Length: 439
Image (cartoon, rainbow, N blue to C red; front, side, top):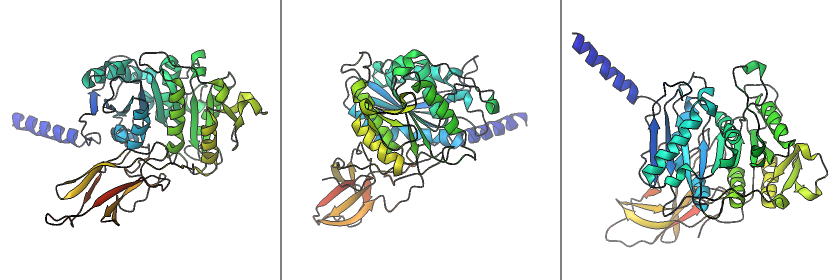
């Protein structure tokens, strides 16, 4: 009887493990690679299991950098990190600069303390850097362990990304902090959260504080009302010391990410273009001082830094004229214009009674959908009509923490009209989220 009971307990335990919300993971076949670590029992170690999935741009010989997409707190946001490396839009940014794209997924139970991972001093810094060694070996790119980082983080992920800037400013090319920043002053309401010091080197790292207007800017009450006060302290502390830091308030949202990627990706692109060394292994370049534009804090218009007449110690720093123009549109209605069409799809073929193809996302506006043409006439869109509660409709969908939905959408159209004895001419057209069509 005891043996039977042990077997039953073992089966129940196995079933519980299989039903973990973190078990539903997209396959990580090349160019994707994944590593997972169990929770550490060592003092100062990471108390949660964590997996890291990395995408390596096909054909790259030596990586120049790493784009990090870090989810926020809570079980739902942590689970959403499982698809971060599969995001075609973020891959377009990484691939342009010969960078890898990595997405951690901390296996935090819903009621657990998020600070146990989003403060990198609690073991997540060490686990992250270990993952780069292990994934570099696994992927055949050992330079992954030493390349510079471009960091993006949402909520607790913003706290983590900002904390990594303060711990490792020499490694960070730029960081975008959505709805979360490291704490620099004690908060009486959350006295258990440790504060950070700001080293001089961190002032040379381009930073953007990005949050929704309903996170304490125009709405002073509610669950996320404390986001703006924390951002304001972080911003003014660094900017008053000459830090390269800006603020972009989303006029449409609260804590959800909304349309921020249409400014975040071009902003990171501008910073990577300026800072990454031409040859792998070199030092990061300083941002060109003469290109900067400035704007008043919580304002909506920017001007060249040389002509700015306001208080520089509280001015919003923007890297160049193009980003200043995009920022102006974003803070008004998030409708950033895009005059360039997306890349055309490639490798269209018939497979298993349907059509499949490949496509790259438009760097500025991502991918909305595809139009299927047969004999010169449109017959369908892939995916069909969709709604995105968090921003513009995207081909891959969009979760709360800015990652694709599961299951991952395929570039496939099941065409019942394909017949072996009839010839048809098929074409596929990419459409970006600005409504522009490819060739």
